[in-house]
Length: 458
Ligand SMILES: [Zn+2]
Image: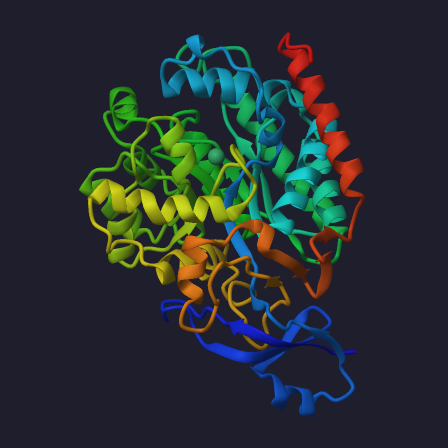
């Protein structure tokens, strides 16, 4: 039976349209997992007199957010007591915080618990699709089985992959890379393919993970392209999150140059970070139609500078928002930081206007994941990934003010109801697909266990 979500402020968010169509007192009709109509409430109510009704009076009805780069198991590292005297550079952060103290000691059970928690928190704050990248070399083979089980259970939409990397746990990447490690990564991605084919609902899809240009040989990078072409799954990778000089010293070339020469780049690539780029590097990413997953908060944490996002957008490149799951899981915080940091960086209040920010976290995210015909806007024929917001605003939220609301007062706590694939996964701010307290307790227990492996007892 059809469901009509009525009497809301409907925001359709077609790309590059200053927010798309805005329908005051509007409605959306869904049937199964598909949006079938969007329009004025009165009209759609008379067209669908027998539909089930959900009243959205006082609420915004809009598409769910799409986050193009996450590492959900990173949740286990949240608030971990850190000896900052050991972290003098981004290198140290990567080696210690990222690998030694986190990824290298992550277990399958830890991945399951943290992914369930992260998916729950993201759904509750309006994110309906994520692109997740897992690295847990000491949990091979099989860590993605735990990711799939958690994602499937909680009900978020996801693309998923394991990071192909020649890095050897416990050994500096400056000393040694081992192609055999990369093969184990490919095998894990292949296992995921088989596992997903038995799920049958299509809400979780594979996307090959590749760590970086500097942790893989040219042969492995070429193999990644062949793999992605063979399976039609696209690639997710980190590009230029470390200073350009590192790769230039190693290869005499930058990361975009190395990746282009080895055939890895293309319109099916989602590249996180992309910070330290020359004009030539930027042109390479542009001409290869690479999708950018901008992660402003982690870039700032690492002292890595501000990515050239305003120039990318001016060039018409597809820039989406990612967040690494390193801080909060509330997309509103990353949106606001993105909205502000470029204004500060360029000393120009005109850059990243609100509608452009919304494009990044909606239609650009969908396009980055190759899902622009399925998600990212409210349009008949698209998947019913819909969120209802109840603005907690000191002033009226109207068609004229709603774009300002997203940049000024919106937080994830305003998210009231969430549908993914037509299924109501959050209702009245509570997860419907699991026991929130149990999910949180399980995550805390796994966090405690992981910290203990670092010699931290709490
Ligand atoms: Zn990342």
